[in-house]
Picture 1 (cartoon, helix red, strand yellow):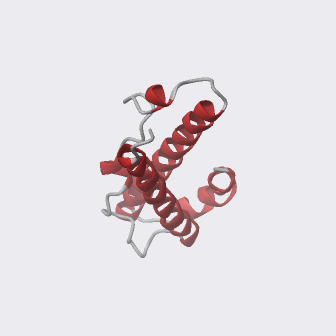
Picture 2 (picture 1 turned 90 degrees about the vertical axis):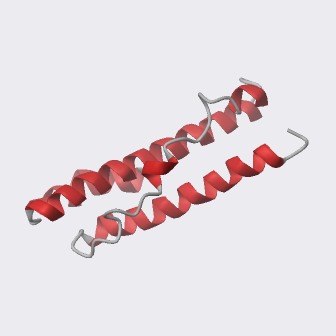
Length: 116
């Protein structure tokens, strides 16, 4: 999240000004997707930490309000492969998508774990 914040604070303004209209639209959509991915992962991790610290129960953490969501948007591939996107955004998108997939896998594994 810190790397994404730094990117959007420093590199993104200059990079986005150089984009054409169509790529600019992709840039906005993919920036939004990146933010959604990181927000979802962070919220999920905070819920897991709350369980670990005894602040909420595992059942509460497994409820809809704490579950990883927005997978349809976070894992869509619409503009993620657009070669005209700035390299910094492309790198962040690839890595955040991999992170989201790993956390989604952990979330799914918790559903199958008979101890939970």
